[in-house]
View 1: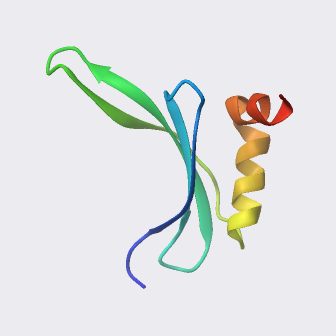
View 2: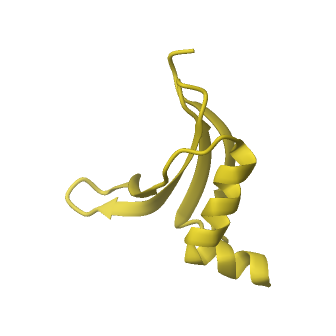
Length: 79
């Protein structure tokens, strides 16, 4: 496998953040947080990387770490 594969995606309730768990080409897992950004000059929105985790042995481990490390996911899970 030469490409990253998205395994899971969670979007914040306000739609301004997202977390994705991806399978790396070396068969490990990592989560990413992206934040929705706005470019005034070009009048466009885009996802900007805001956090990248270390490597995990499983998608479940990466997702658990995301819920532990990202405040908006912790808050979402506690409601």
